[in-house]
Length: 258
Length: 261
Ligand SMILES: Nc1ncnc2c1ncn2[C@@H]1O[C@H](COP(=O)(O)OP(=O)(O)O)[C@@H](O)[C@H]1O
Ligand SMILES: [Mg+2]
Image (tube, rainbow over all chains, first blue to last red; front, side, top):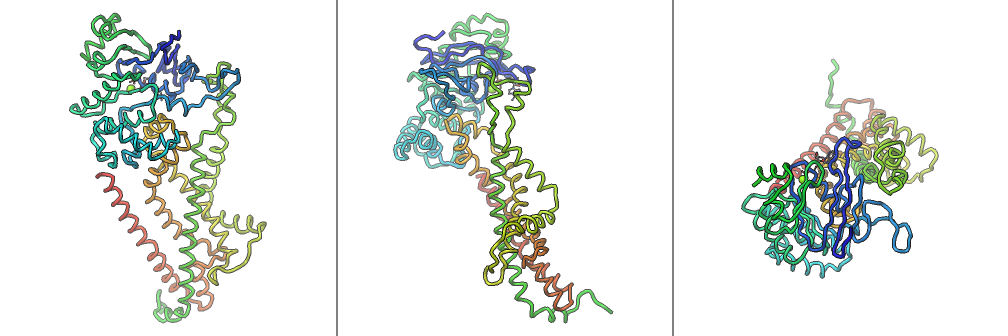
């Protein structure tokens, strides 16, 4: 059910492979509200990535609905306000959802600044000078303004991920999706990336974060989802999930990771 | 006793040195044009093969607008005619002799299309040269297509995901992210194809292109010596191909150093 602050309503979301032999997502229902920092935890293979990637349609769901800004984005066509059938504009939709990947996925043939200005210029039609000014301001926020003309290969993992985050922010998304943003980092670099994410959360950015950093989930998250076998087994506040887990699967999982 | 190579035969063919020079120029021009045309054909073919244009796509949607998972309609909805055509082209050209292809282009296609019969540089017969370039270009397009496709597929899928998640369209992703990286990776392979074409272009003398092999033929007809002109041709081909592949290998090494920075 859509409340006033609700941003994304996911209903009975399914993603099946091989005619249903593999159920990566098997009926997930959840509401994401504006300002939520929703942390998704669960064992490997439980469908966390598939869930996240379905939200911006990097995966095409095979069932259920994702209503974002009032439109069910799992349908290729929908009725607009005037009742006309229109085609879903996936590119326009994705601009509103920033995504940060485990392996950074910076563009290696472009400088840091070019990485950050490409989409604002080519997709949003922003002027190059404006885009660069904005990119430099964002880089400054994460302490990397002096690396603007470097290539990704010259950066450390933590620096790359900070760039990836501000690259997504340059598009001014309504929600940021993080898929294990610190899993590929050396331990000493995890903190610098989590700090940027904390800042972002403080500013009120809506975030969905898949992570194994239970400290982050507890400290920054306002809601925690526990997934297993493509299903949402349990959800609640960090306090409820970590201090009073109900399902045996969650108790088991927490015993292993904490 | 007859010797395999007779020195005085070289003096017999010496007056025809000009023919070999012209033949070399033709071979180089032919190969350059071929690789450029081949590359353009290959890029189009590769994009067609990897395209995602499915005209019957809407048949694959159920009444709720979701993708059907199975059934005849799901199959039809995935049919991509561009990809089908490109694949057929590549497989047919790779599975038939280049000599047959050249004859079909020269005696078939260009007997219907009349070409102007002027001479480039005062000696290259355009109505022979052009069909030769077209036939070789079409053939190497099929091979280069697979090279380009492999180059594109070697780019990490995360690149496309990052680009699309930023809102770039499929075309923008190709143009700004994938192709620049892929082409840099396959540049050595394209240059190698150039060397292959230099050697393969010898076959165009069968339709009267005045390349190195046709120089051999002309000298043979005029002087009745055959081995020595062939040795000259061997030397010319070697001098064209060997340094070129060495230069390519050098740049390949330098580029891979750059990557490990
Ligand atoms: N392309 C695919 N084909 C078949 N199975 C897949 C594919 N992608 C993911 N899966 C399966 O879906 C399940 C969920 O994967 P994923 O969402 O990546 O889990 P998580 O991110 O929680 O580790 C896994 O069992 C995985 O093997
Ligand atoms: Mg995952």
